[in-house]
Length: 107
Image (cartoon, rainbow, N blue to C red; front, top):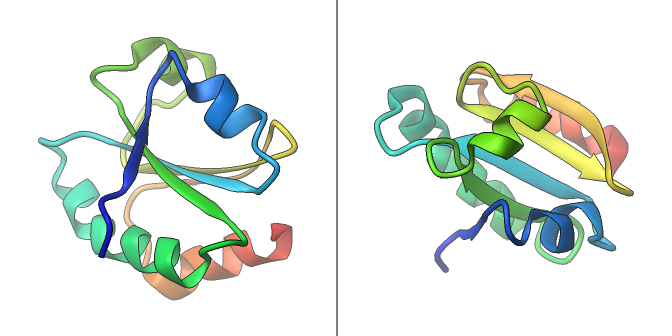
């Protein structure tokens, strides 16, 4: 499986906001246990949704301005962006079926 793409404050606009595809952003950190639990699910979704949804990660510690801009107070937080707008926001660990159920209506 390919490595997940990470976005940063410098390329967030290009990679997420201006993307032609919906983008699922996983706000994460290396020290976060629930982030580690959700990581395999996010990677599965990236493969399953290839070509329909772009799935990327954003390191919470290295990108504090994006965290503040979108009011991310806890991680993991998953946000689905479509047309530059947040369409769905999921905070905390969720099983795969719950993530799919929340994201699918927007895809």
